[in-house]
Image (cartoon, helix red, strand yellow):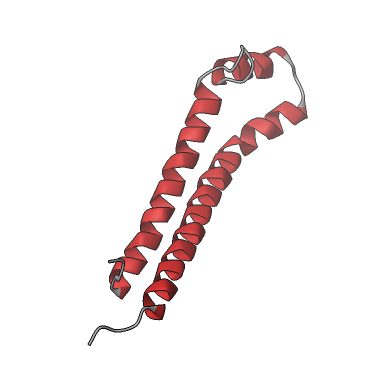
Length: 101
């Protein structure tokens, strides 16, 4: 039976937010720290930034924490959104059931 109280619905929305945050955190961790076919990793980025002098590279380095925060916030927000959609679906489904006498 999938009838849940209001606090359980709210906690499932929060759980979706936490799961989305953790998934986006693993995405950031995997892309930045582990090389993909010797392509993107922190060590390769640092070598590239040290090898060239330019304002563009400095700007990109300064914005990396903003990119990471945006990805983490976006993942958390998407997880919360889809978690709340799922809980509202089950809430509507539980309301349509006939009450037992």
